[in-house]
Amino acid sequence: MILKHTVEAESSGKTIKYILKEKLMFSQNLIRKLKRQNGIFCNKKPVFVNAIVKENDIVEANINFEENSEGVIPEDIPIDIIYEDEVLIALNKPPDTIVHPTRNHLNGTLGNALSYHFLKKGISSKIRPVMRLDRDTSGIIIFAKNSFTQDFMTKQMSSNLFYREYIGIVHGLVDKPNGTINLPIARKSSSTIERCILPSGYPSITHYKVIEHLKNATFLRFILETGRTHQIRVHCQALGHPIYGDTLYINTSTTLENQAIFPQNQPIIALDHSAAKDSVFINRQALHSSKVVFIHPINKKPLELAAPIPYDIEKLMEILRK
Image (cartoon, rainbow, N blue to C red; front, side, top):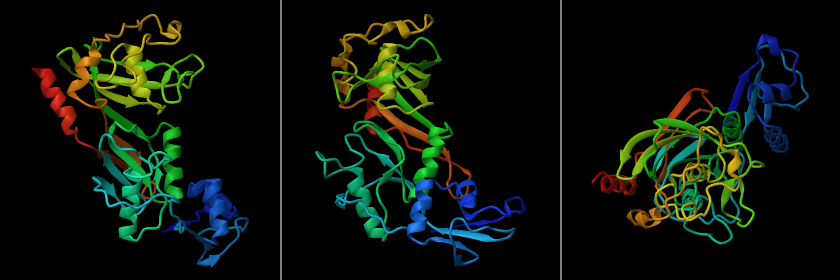
């Protein structure tokens, strides 16, 4: 794919590197790749990045690199494609599915399925998830098809310009119709997987809104302002309303490692550990990535994508309405 930029009067006299960084939004790493691949042109001629441009020059960059994810075995696994174009693909991830192959899970991942999909379509691309979902969280997940798109999307996330919405069912009746959980999250010292609330943790903000009260449960909408590992799950545990089916964050003796950091207007609610037995109605955490909105890396227009509520969460809601 070739990205182009026509030099405006105010950019006349600037360098090619300036155009690539400031106008095409390329990262320094991508510019280095382009230099190695001789993929930078001005008026159809190869140029160095320190070359000077003038008004109406056409700067082009070939961002199609021959890249494949080493060690990712293509597997013919069905995928639910929400959206696909030449620079990105959005999938509806099913529960109990790992996103990317690891040393302990080489097969059966979305990465394996996507590698097969790319192979079938003649696309040479690494597996580049620009957002991550836990194994048992379902819903929208986006993969970039090139490093430019990956960089562009990552910048949106770090600048809080990438809207992420989840739906979930939590134990207990949440009293406030909406609220914000602003509590720092860190890795738990005794675990390589579990996270906890710690004053020294990373700033983490989750907004929530009650959609429906169920039988000793609440159907919530979550909007992420930050994207820490297990953020919604940890914040719901801290609120005293753990996610239904979440075995990792439901059988914990304390909601916070340091309870003093809770503001006085956000009292800690004791966890009801008997709730764990009720989670047999669903065999994973009832959490779903339902909607994203972001600026498309090529046309620079907002793109909104949605994934319907999955069957198991719908079924759980039916049970909890009785």
